[in-house]
Length: 574
Image (cartoon, rainbow, N blue to C red; front, side):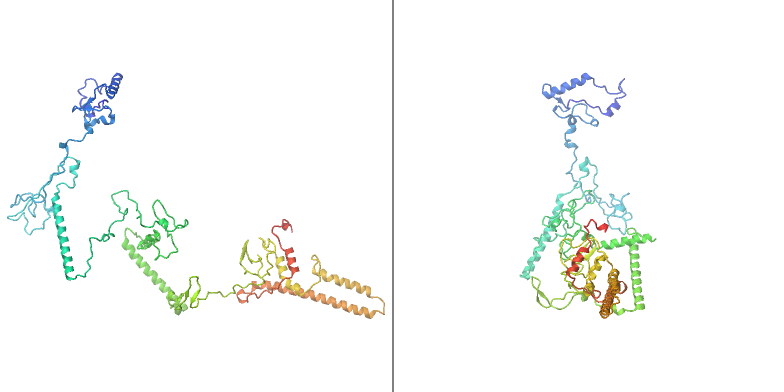
């Protein structure tokens, strides 16, 4: 507060140290003195005691805070004061409006050389090395007589901070009148030229350059792009409000990423649009244009060269690096061309290298084709579609889809019946579990491949548990027993018995021949299955290894009974 304790400056304490008799420090206030000062301060705030007075006799408001009313220790105040808070007096301020004379002092003419003056012109206000006049043939130091004027010397003694740093000091505003007069003369000359043009050619068009506001618009800095090297903080680039925002180029959330902090979109928001038609192709498009790619390749070449023992650096020796890179590229091209010519000389085929450019080979013809909005051909013949050398869209064996239209558990199949057996007969999807996730066993393949043999040779029905050898041995044992029973000493029926014996022998031979034919058929089929491993598939005809016929209802029923089922819990015990 204004009534607070007065701080004694340190210098005053040091000076008065010798004058003090026994006290080395200022006398400290007692508790009673602090209490009296506090009561006086409260009385002044209440208005019952008079306010404190400064050295000029002005009252000090008791409600002023203490950090304002207390003067610093170096100010040297002897009592309560607010002088350190008031502005300085006018006599202490600098004279910003004073004007020092500039230029040559024409009031005095010098005709003789003075000691210490400029040896070139003779002015005493500067030395020879600072002289701005041309070097004279005969210097002023050796000339008999000279005519020279001294310059006005500016007094640099400044009173305060502002006067010392006044950049408009000694400036005469009347000098600006010369610039205005010169501009007016130029404008007057332009008006006279326009008048003469109109007088000579009344139909001539004269562009009004004054009204053309966009004439120098390219030279003006964009808002936010001006960067001062002296400033640490630069303003971010500001978007012009009339432009489309980058995040509105493509509203798909999976398109190019937009960084809202830096307002940058590095990738292309519309990659499907051609580059020549795109209004904005991302900020990386600018980064990889111009000489940036050349700079990157030069830096990469410098790194590779340094790794191989060549002492070169991009920033330290750019010319050396460029020459080395050019030499390397030339040698590389020479090596490629020499290798190419060596191969052509050794193997031939130079005529195949002389082909027209790709632009002439790829779909450039003079045939005119006109299409409607729906895509139909109105004029001309539509270009035929390119087809492969293989048969397409051919449905075999009652299938409605081609092989490979279905995929499950690592296997291909038919989508119509979900069968994994190639060239099988389509039976349709009669049950929901028309396919299994496991690979079919060899028994199913044999069952599906056997119907043709079963239809050609009808063998009498035999239980599935009995082998083929038992089938052949059963009738032979029966015939042998019957022969033993029939051979009797009856002479009357000998002819009938001989006929029956011959018939049985013929039947036995037929059964043996049928079984042999069946075995040979099965062996031929197994051989046909092994043929693809031995022969080249590219030399055989399409579907030449299979002779598939429509299966009967009994065969289909038997296949359904014997096929494996993945959901069967007893499958692992079978």
